[in-house]
Amino acid sequence: MEPLPLLLIADAVPARAAFVRTHLAPLGWRVAIADDGGMAPTEVPALVLLDPGLASAGIAHGIRRAGEGPPILAFAGEGDSVADSVAGIDGIIAWPCTPEALAAAIRPWQPVDMTLDRLAAMFGTARLAGLLADFDAQLAHALDRLDEADSGLAHRIGGLAGTLGFARVSAAWLAVSEGEVAAVPAARASALAARAAIERRLGAPDVPTASAP
Image (cartoon, rainbow, N blue to C red; front, side, top):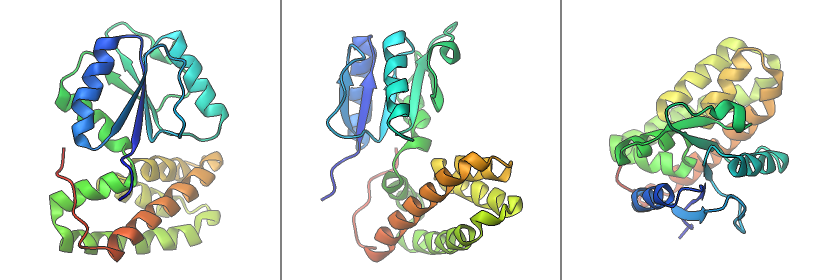
């Protein structure tokens, strides 16, 4: 069995870190807490949640120096200026929030395999297989033409990926559709990762799936 995806919380507020662990662990995450903003896990996390303070900003910079890295989301209360204190974050989670709002905020950034579990719970295995086969074919076609700067094709892939919940594929391909050449490597990598996950799922249709959050 594949290990559960790792979520790292770098937060100086113990109650908030405990809240995240309590409500996200049942959704299929392994949760590690770096309460002082200075602890790094022994493996690369699938998602990072940050306190908007300076310690968390340091972790964000470190992750970005190491490469593209996992998605990074920052908590922000009313009046917090996260954009000024944390560079390289991918999104904001309004705080305080309900367990439902927390789950919704991280859902677009969950690993591809977790996205497929959620889609299977929504559509059923048979219907999902058809949707994934079609999406996989479109990804293959788009990858073949990625260097042609076809903005229309990139926009269609970005929109379809967003509809299906492949957030990283969507973000990268929409950026390509807007002429951002620097987004091409991320578009290629995210599409290849999505195709690999789809191949695993289509090759093992009887694998049990988790309930949707």
